[in-house]
Amino acid sequence: MTLKKWIHSFFAVTVAYVVATGCAYAGDLNHYVEVMPEIITSVDFSNRDVNRIMCPTGQPVKDVVCSQEKGVTVKIAGNNVFVKFLIKRDPATGKNIYVKKPVEMYVVCGAQSTIYTLIFNPRNIPARFVKLAGDTKKIEENLSLFKDMPAEKVVIMMIKKVYVNDIPESFTIKKVNHRIDIFRDIDVIFNRTIIAEGEGVRLKEYIVRLKKSYKKDRMKVMEKYFLVPELAQNPIGIALETLTLLKGKPTRLFVVENKNIHS
Image (cartoon, rainbow, N blue to C red; front, top):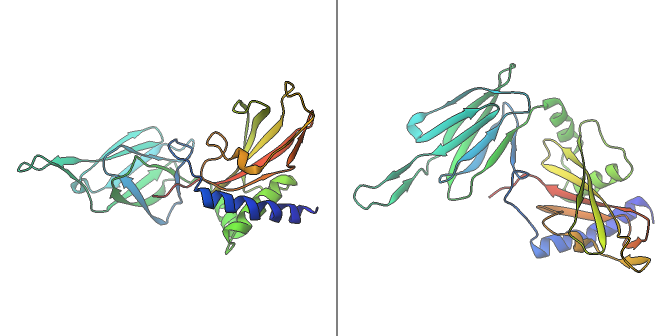
């Protein structure tokens, strides 16, 4: 089977499963909204909990500008901004009054004074995490690469490029090499993460193999077996090199995720 046929074959089955079962996992700082500079970006923020904004790595927060009359408190710590909407109490009823009107904020990062413009929409949701994108050149290259491309083709391209190790320089590669012990008979090594900055997707590459303790020489598997929160968070596609694991022969598992969580 050619690579193109292999990818299309897995995608037809796997995406249907992801959508049908509603597999999406949230709740940690791997999930965030990414904001680019010089573009007005609207983000839903919690009007109850403390929200976090993070400047790019190595770029401390230089300044934060917003209207204090809008009922917002701001605390700066290194390259982080913590935003909390004030909660007032109705003197007549004793009930809490939460901010509901949008708030505009400007965050200035690093020595280059890169400006990010955000509009916060107060909502009754958990705290949000916003990452401010740093390498605008990489972002522009990725946006051009995926321009007008439907979600299915984005997933296929991501997997194809990692599968043949033809990863664009505009992608960010993070080596992990971490063992995840979740299956009785299968070893899983989280090998690396490949991120397409600006496009809102990332690919996680795992190495899977049968454990030495497994008594048989092979095992039939399906991609959906690996759609567990320890491996796949907000997945939009998943693929295995082979659906038969052989003793002593590792294979790769690819999980493509939408790394931007939206309410």
